[in-house]
Image 1 (tube, helix red, strand yellow):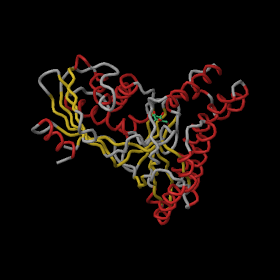
Image 2: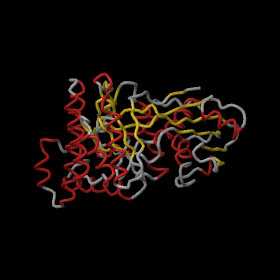
Image 3: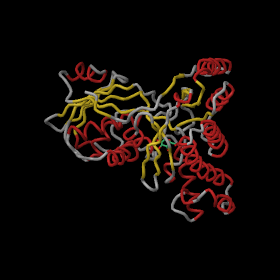
Image 4: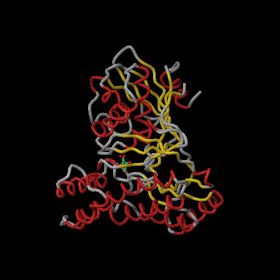
Amino acid sequence: MTGAAQLFRTIFGGRPDGVWAAPGRVNLIGEHTDYNDGLVLPFALAERTEAAIRRRDDRLVRICSSQNPQQIFGIPTRELAPGWPAGWAAYVAGVPWALETDVGFDVAIDSKVPVGAGLSSSAALICAVGLGLNDLLELGLSRRELAQRTRRTENDYVGAPTGGMDQIASLLCTEGHAVLYDVRANSIEQVPFDPPAAGLEVLVVDTRVRHGHADGEYAARREDCERAATALGVRSLREIGFADLDSALGRLGSKRLVKRTRHVVTENQRVIDVAAALAADDWSSVGELLTAAHASIRYDFEASCTELDIAVEMLLDSGAAGARMTGGGFGGAAIGLVPSALAYEAEHTVRAVFADNGFTPPNIFTVVPSAGATRIA
Ligand code: GLA
């Protein structure tokens, strides 16, 4: 029996109608580009969030989770409204709201995706519940439609102004691939991504510095990008091509907006270049592009932090082909593309340097490109 099904039996009694699981993601490259209509290249983790769900005959939604055992919520569907309840349960309650259904259900959650690590634990939770309700209530939404609706849960119900990458990754990734998502074109391409075949591992260093997307910094970066687009007279920064970058920067008065714009435009180009390097099996270029992306997010987008910078530096010192922060930033995780033979040593080095600096001990683990959300029971 799955963890969520077990919790379901303990709290609600009996069996769920089904159990759905959705993964967190690592964004290989393309950071803070999604809400600029840009390009991203995430892949799904093997680590998942499970939702065990049973339909009810009335209009009540009951929610519990292994991670928050002291809280059980019971909310009539007519009371579902943005902001209610506060905290983690909003990511569940906001799903029927975004799917516009008033059918009641019981749901038990169990998650293996680290929370607040920049690995999309929130999208994993939303998408597990979303896929479950879509199946169970026979709503007939495609995965692409479901990604759009579940994004509304995060943006409009929870109030986190995130882009659409995480829901796309959680719902549409496939094993052994990263997904190239072009937001402006609304197109998706599966890009083969198999580091072990090249003798490499993707090592994640979760710094355990916690970020929150509802916090001000993410929203402030987003506003900077919108301001820059307005100043340049374009709909979004995606409209600025790499070749036009210098002339665009010359038209921006604010140094801060110059830096934000330079990050977004060069990052879009790096996504294209990484996809091309992967197709050419050119892993050293992939690595160099990841490292360049970190410098860009650190100095131009100013969305890194000391722990992330040190993790990246230590991964590179330990022989990584490339390393960068991943996810929203201001904490969370860094990734390194590390030769498998050096992974143990790299982990040891990062741990030692974190200890020397008096930082919280990091969580360090290897991730493999895995499948998107699915029904598991
Ligand atoms: C968070 C958001 C994503 C994306 C990244 C930054 O993970 O949820 O939509 O904006 O930050 O690339």
